[in-house]
Image 1 (cartoon, rainbow, N blue to C red):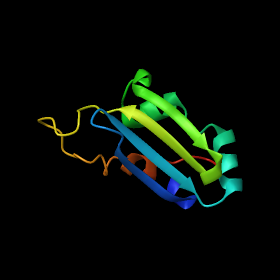
Image 2: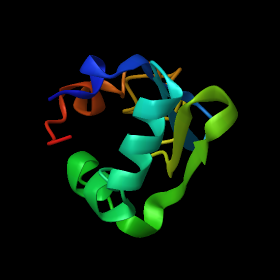
Image 3: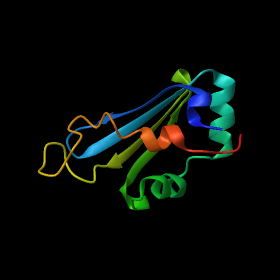
Length: 103
C-alpha cells in the first residue's frame, strides 16, 4: 500500500529557511489512529527513506484534531543557498508518496 491510498494530502514545504516540514492528512480519524499506532513512520524509517541522520529529524508530531502527521527536518541545504533546487521545499514529498508499507 502507498500513503496516497489512505491520505488525502501529502505535501512538503519550508518551515523557515533551515527546515522542511512534511504534512500527511489522513482521510478519516480511524485511518489516522491506525497509521499512528502502527508506527510506520519513525525517526529511523524516515531517516532511511530520506537518507538523512536521525538527529536531523526535529519532530514527528501527530495532530489528532486534523487527522494529520507533521514531520520536520533540518534542510540539507538552506533555502536559496547555491546548489539548492527547491526554494519553497514544495517538491520534497515524493519519497513519502511512494513509500510502500503493510497496513
